[in-house]
Length: 309
Ligand code: UDP
Ligand code: MG
Image 1 (tube, rainbow, N blue to C red):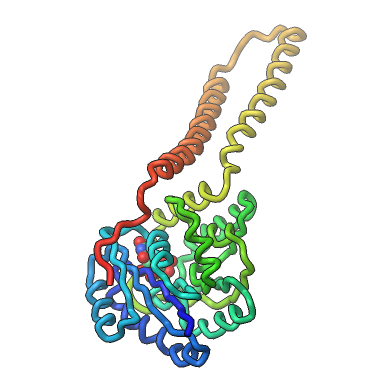
Image 2: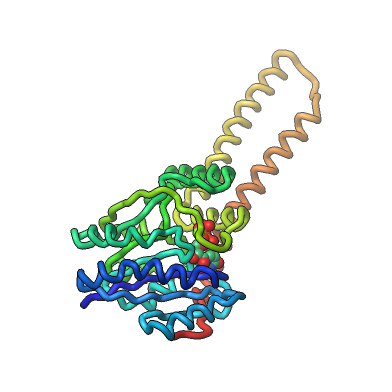
């Protein structure tokens, strides 16, 4: 028998824990037929509700259900990493507990792994049921990433992905603190098969992401997989120097020919404000990278465990 580890990050999801288990286990016979046993690793990301209780209840019924519980909320990235670290499976799949990653896709995903793919990934082709503003900025982010990063990051890509042990070990070898898994998947390479599906709305509960959290997450993504913004400062600097040079020539020539007196401090103030603004902006970008480097250098653990079953 080989083993499939299903990793499920949960943060305040007491309503979904059992629902997910039931849906997942509908695939039990299929995998049995293939000689594959399923283990479920719920990663409780510091939930404040009855999530841990629900997981323990499942564990009593079925000992293939495991749990890692964090000492506080470390974020989904940390939860996925912890799950990958504990997984023993020859195959590993990452799934959301809210059933937005349909378990019914698993047999199809597995068929591609059998064909020799090291990873089978999924992407949403629609964003039905999502606030339009969120979709707009999500699209913008992926378009920007495509331009400024060499790492392939698919638009609409989910973290829902079935991988072989080889790929999981590759991901685990990346021990960075600022984790952006969508980029890490692309960075490690391996042959990936993409499956597409229509967006499914959350079964129970509410999304744990708001606009602000997503914005910060996108900055994580950019700083983790591109250094293009750092070049921006140099480019703007060169541009400003060129403009300044032309203006100097223009003013000298004008003075020699027409003998104009100096005039117009408002324009001067505008120029000073503008260059000042650009300088602060560029220093800010520098600060972002410095802050990320600072956190990396501290080498703190990615998560801390409170309880494990
Ligand atoms: N999640 C988590 N820690 C967090 C936020 C979310 O483990 O800090 C889990 C959550 O329980 C769910 C998955 O990550 O299983 C996806 O979260 P959510 O459905 O809220 O995100 P969305 O689908 O809206 O992008
Ligand atoms: Mg969701």
